[in-house]
Amino acid sequence: MHKAPLPAYLMGDQVRLKQILINLVKNSFKFTRSGSIRIIAAFDEQQEMLHIHVVDTGKGILETEMDRLF
Image (cartoon, helix red, strand yellow):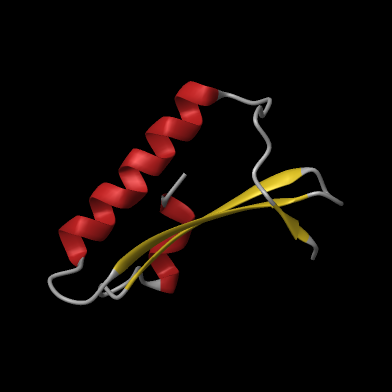
């Protein structure tokens, strides 16, 4: 994957993206007592897609609970 600088403008549902990011970051704060929380954003020019990762050292989500996220 070729990563490029973030573009000035993106098309998509701004309200939904904002709410998802807020929820992910809130959960990171809630379940990460010590350690770190990182938010990583990268734009893939070939796929014309923004990739956002919220990475923390919290306890994580059980595999059996993943289907309940969305």
